[in-house]
Amino acid sequence: MDYSTLDEVRRTTTPLQLDTVEAFARGTISRREFVRRGLLIGLTMPSIVAVVAACGGGGSPAPGSSGAPGTSTAPGGSTGTVTTGGTIKVACQKPVKLDTIAMQDLAAYGITAQSFEFLCTLAPNATDIAPGLAEKWTPNADNSVWVFNLRKGVKWQDGTDFTADDVVATMERMVTAGTAAIKGVIAKGSAVATDPNTVTFNLAQANGNFPYLVSVFNAQSLITPKDYATGTTLDKKPAGTGPWKLDKYDVASGAKFSRNETWWGGKTPLDSVEWVFFDDTAAMVTAMQGGQVDAIVQFDVLTGAQLFDDPNLTVVSTPTANHRQIWMRTDTGVFKDKRVRQAFALTIDRPTLVSQLFKDKAIVGNDHVIAPFYPYFDDSVPQRTQNIEMAKQLLSDAGATNVAATLEYGQQFEIADLAVLLQSNAAKAGITITPHGQDNGQFYGAAWCPEKPADPPCSGATEFGIVDYGHRPTPDLYCNAALQTKGVWNSSQYSSPEFDAAFKEFQSAVGVDAQKVACKKIETILNEDVPIALPYFYNYLSGNSKKFTGVYTSALGQMFLNQASQV
Image (cartoon, rainbow, N blue to C red; front, side, top):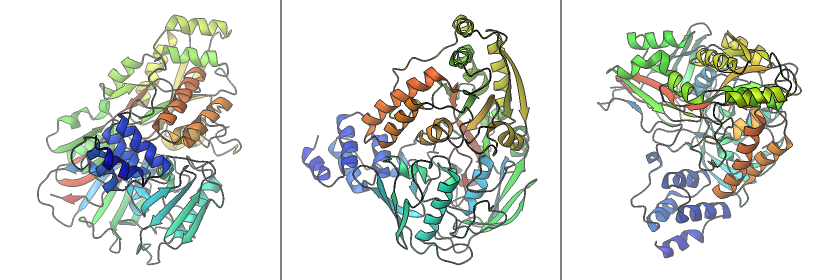
């Protein structure tokens, strides 16, 4: 240990940065996590390199070396000579609505991110997030104020200048809409344009993960022009800062984009990109194998197993926090008594789900949203396993006889098969489940989180259903949107002062050790109350033809093509 070098870095750090340096020096966080966390909280790369070397870590820890969950470790494709020109065709499911603030489905996330950009984006070989429209960001000592320095010289696609006013206006729209992950973190007036290229965020409460909430991993945080009214959709007003300009959009068939010649990132190798819409995964896989498309944003193991063996394709399988939440209304209906919710959770044969639905490209979940690879995950909370006799006893104790419910879900990936397996599992304890699948657009709007009644949000949700959640490198969005009292996606109508307090403790915690203490509380409370059953976290699968290189995804439906090229 080179203490003199460590001391030099220690003298120039904020309390939050110092805590991260000390955690790495003590060996309580990995090198990969130190690099990820250091970049997030504003440590310079020379300081990170110095600390790693001082602790005996060897050479320079380049930002792209981590292979962190939720990111591809390298751009997809061949390593041949890159050529310019041409078009790539990308297969994805039909989006519901291209409203950057209100969108909820992964397909819409992918389409809008072609033209609009984030303050913090994802780059190939990057650790979670990287500079986007913001070149850098720095917190104060307790994470309650964050300063974002914006990239200079950026133009909107209509030729006007991108400024801090656009960022402030976007944040105001997000606050008004109560957008996922931002609600309660910033309030009206929190974002201030210090100068044309600087935005200062005065948070409603301290948050050590704030850059993630204005990044690619909070899909609704795309920066739009200051005059972009809430409810406007990309197809009605295509005017982003990103590498691709929307030329044509047909909700039934697809979207076509051409190169933005004035993009701040330079000239893209490809001339254009085309997104082709499909109704189901099987059709996408068939098109991929037949050469009708060049890339597929996401597929599942059961439908796309043959893609793994295709020598013409590059397939990426990335461990992520992607999961399915099986919500149960806690305020009304057959699941109002938590003993009934616990009984249902005890019927689930989780290892069998992982094996049958994912061919082991997933890991077992424990009915809470703290994924095992998060550095603050606490493994002391006992894993729930199938126990039919205990489930029957809980139902008896609750006086719940002839428990029956309709299980709503959207038609995508393995969810229909999951519903059937849950039905079979629950029947062993005397719980009757009737699966009911429907089109994604109808499901999101009618079953999961209807717009009305608006207060509280999602109060029109059905009592029982399965909803998909994409990857986030921190659990903030899951906790804030789906589980916090009056969360904007709280289809369970769960309200727990204990949980709310534990989540607030996590958000304001300085350092991984303090976050882990809060996460143990979160894990314990959710495992006990079971507003959602969460049986697994699964690998994100995507792929592209080896005729292309430089294709990479966020594991949240966004496929980045600004570096893609033909080989």
